[in-house]
Length: 212
Image 1: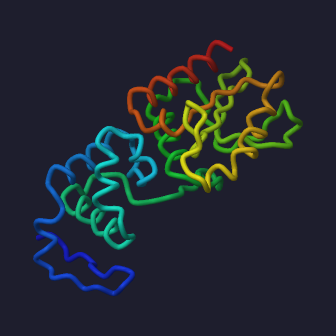
Image 2: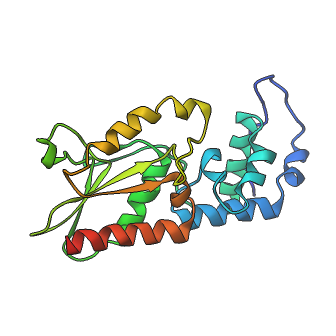
């Protein structure tokens, strides 16, 4: 039996329970489930803007937080093996602070090779440990290749929102510190949200670390 879903929005509108059976379109449920399976995370509305078929889901179900939550719960009711609804994860006491970063981490773990050490928020040794990267890839006897996940900037250099634009200078400064100092791979939000591109970028980073 499908569990009951909350249906109160910010206006405290309580909609009749029978609406939920038909309101959430089966194709939409399957699409979100497939994207979650492919990306290894449950994508946020912001991520969906860069996914095939994602903008339609955002337009239909992200009009209110309660509606979006009800949609996600409906998907989970039919697909219980999907990634957990989580925005952050701790690995060895280091926090992965965004769904976009979490997607990259899980792809790294999926593509892990023998001898590869995947580090979360490693100090950048070349900077005298004064800064931290999102991830580091290390093969014994080779330099560490760092990974920075640009979760609010596209590969075309566009910020995903006006609010994200406020953090752009900080992101640019974060990336500039690697120039002439250490090898880095930058993976943007639109690349993370395309499973083929995401997989290739991760493989590219691992190959670079192996051959560095």
